[in-house]
Amino acid sequence: MRTGKAAVWKGKFHIDIEQLPIPEVADDGLLLKNEASGICGTDGHLIEQDPPYPAIMCHEIAGRIEKMGAHANKSLNVYGGPVKEGDRIVLYPWITCGKCEGCRTHRPGTCTTCADSFVYGVPYSMLGLGGAEPINSRVNEAPYFKGGFAEYTYVFPETYVWKIPDDMPSEIAVLMDPMAVAVRAIEMAQTSPGIVEEGLNTNSKVVIIGAGQVGILAAAYIRALGAEQIIMAGSRTDRLRVSKELGQVDEVIDIHRVSPADRIKQVQDMTGGGANVVIQCANSVKAFGEGLEMLARLGTLIEVGNMVNQGETIAIDPAKMICAKHARILGMSANNPQSFNRAFNFLKRHKTIPFHKIYSHRTDLDGLLDTLKQKGNDDYVKGLVVHS
Ligand SMILES: [Zn+2]
Ligand SMILES: [Zn+2]
Image (cartoon, rainbow, N blue to C red; front, side, top):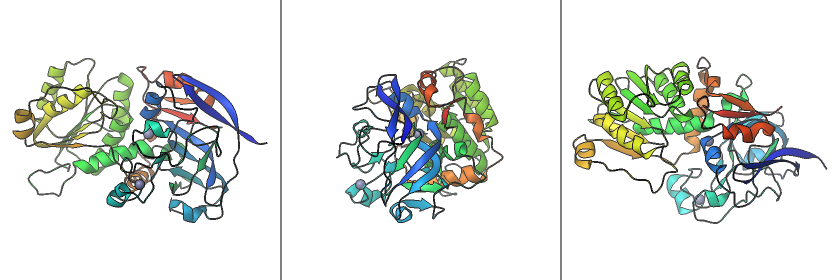
């Protein structure tokens, strides 16, 4: 029996490297030989918990098609296809049912709106959707390879995939996932030009809070769209350096060196009265309050960072901070394959942007757990599993 290597997540900071059987490929699926598997903030959050059953993490997956079912070009949603064995693809991690009220209302593929979703690399009960598990993530049930931290990934029907052009490295293609979060957040900040509540445009002074992967990629995207000024408020020297090199931000504020009151004042001074757009990408409820303080009148704040902090609260003054400011505040957690497509095209066409600099840590499967443990270190920006 042919086997492939997998990093099997069995408990809190517990991963075993195992050999799994290489599955049969059905007519409507395909088997990917993984080339690049991105380590997301989600994986860092998951490894701190016990899984409901042994599973393989990772939803940022790019690889080469090893074996392909006869009808896979029809059963999958292929951008830039058709694809054939030997081609490289990158995938959108959510599979939605396409039939439920959420899918009918918000279009099939839109994540977090379909209760019957499957996500590569995330066991169903950890999605918090409350529906029925459409495909299980159990590592001991065929087709075994259901997450990216392994030698292979089995790609199920209805998955959205993109054919990767020859001149695009897999490690850049796999950034489509965090890039799509940034793209969606920025698109939410845009409004029609000329309306009173002008959103992001070439006049805008922008503050990004949180120099993690989404914040840095958001800066690069805003720079390409055009903005008057981009200020990054974040921590850790290496992240701020990458914010400048990759994200092309104008100014950085190191939040570990400047007090909250002083950084609000710094933003007021640098922008001449506040930021027109704040993209809040830090995993902190206090950062939301700070973002509101940094916002100019008639400004727009997009809240991206607080996905896992349910139950934590802060006090705000709505009369002053929201009403008098005429603030536009938009929360974000849903995304769709169309945003991923725009993210993919951005990564594909902007070859002069040094996207590879986002990877502070590269590892093979054997070193994965050790890399996950380093996520809080000063020099950590984003990790990547490279497969030989
Ligand atoms: Zn991700
Ligand atoms: Zn659905």
